Length: 65
Image (cartoon, rainbow, N blue to C red; front, side, top):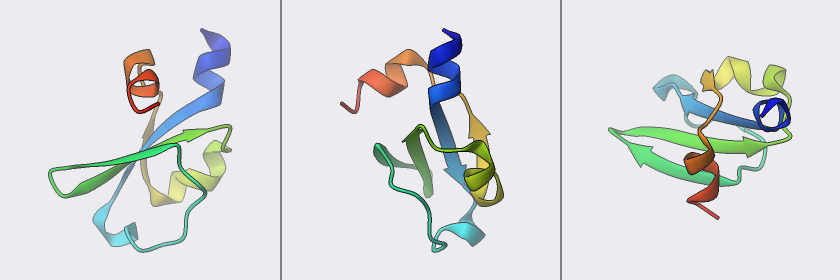
């Protein structure tokens, strides 16, 4: 589980950052006008300024694939 938590991140992009460049995503979806992006092996520091980060669930990672 530790490896999973260190590998995957989910980013909810805040609206003012929606047009900023960002690393390649595994998956993107829209919920209530916000972009929810899934990343693999992307440093947390690269994403932190774009919005809210959390560790996705296993279902979040397996469903888009």
